[in-house]
Length: 280
Image 1 (cartoon, rainbow, N blue to C red):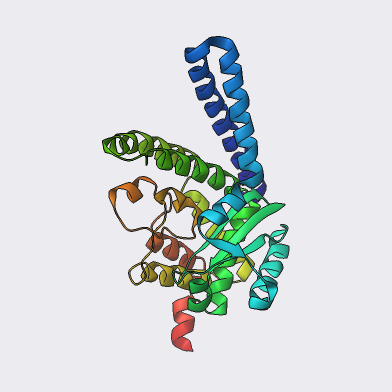
Image 2 (cartoon, one colour):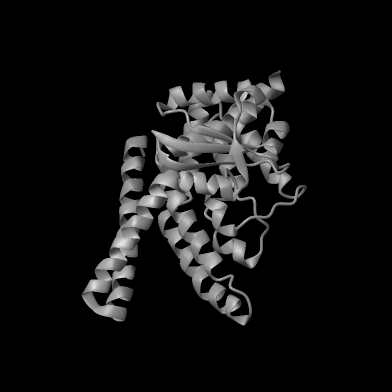
């Protein structure tokens, strides 16, 4: 699938989600107060969607504890992102840093002209340059295809529903039992694991080799067992790989394919790499 076709499909997914939400709000308004209240509820839904479109990336960066990146901190990071953005023909995303030892990267925003990209200090310290380049290219591929737009809407909806259940007492478990599956269903409806395979391929092409990203995925997967990580499971679609422990709630929101399959597909793009390695 070309980047243009993927971008169009993602725009249609967001419109589909908007129509569904407006229909739900209209139905609730109609039941509570007839046509007038239904129209008010739809107007409120449209305002909320507009706010998510305009400000969700900044809200998500605040949610994960990211701060704006200063050029003096790591000039190589900014230059690498700018170079890759030129290759992908996107506006360089606004950079953020997460002061956290857990190695992770995530992107959010509207698409090629407006997006944000965050990396943790743990990622910057754990990955050598070739692997870091692969991860950054993977995130920029999501930005080019507007995967970030769908991911941002899906995550904001999921977080809102999951957090709405945390009101305390026995009712919290009941609401979580009802709302979490709804949030997870929307995430799986909107986000196919194929988006990760496509972003991996695009990153390999931009970097000139699939092995930097493949090695990075392996390193990130191993880090899950070594470093503690805590966040809302509804944010799972944002990350390069699924960073969550395998508990019941986290399994509901898994939208990433297995890391082993992603690595195998990346290695298959250069099937002769083992023979060259032995020859060296």
